[in-house]
Image 1: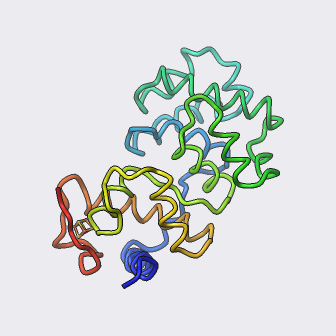
Image 2: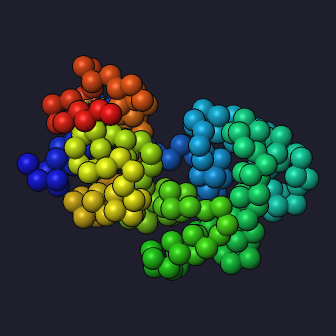
Length: 220
Ligand code: SF4
């Protein structure tokens, strides 16, 4: 079976199992941006609490976030952990949106994918996963998001040679072997997260895993 066939078959099985997951869980592109920073190194359930608190304080707004007292914003984002670091990362990103994009993240759509990505990566605290999540989930650019779950699961499946493979190389494998399709990239990443949270965990639950017949089950 080619890598392309295997990746497509895995997606088909996951989609049948979990259904279409309709990511990103946010009401606006701006909310996606906030979520991509807050979700770094924590579970999404913690991010939801932070977003809710920001909403309740009327702070899900670029200008209000940038002009609010740091301690008020930090209190709201505290459930997401590392709140001092995340506060500064958030401010760097929001300042970029204000100064370079006239206050609207959607203005990044005026650039081609590579230029838009490089602009995001030039912001302190924005790494590849965060940049690609913004590009895909806030702006509908066709780019595949890679995370630690992707590497762990697809190493076990037998598609990645090493679990610590470079971000760009993993991304290239998916993008070379899947149709260039925003909706597919959007849902495939969501399916991987769901699979990794429920079955392909630190200690995998292979017996009930929906893709066990497609997996080489390389467990270290
Ligand atoms: S069969 Fe096991 S190792 Fe393979 S994807 Fe499922 S849980 Fe992970």
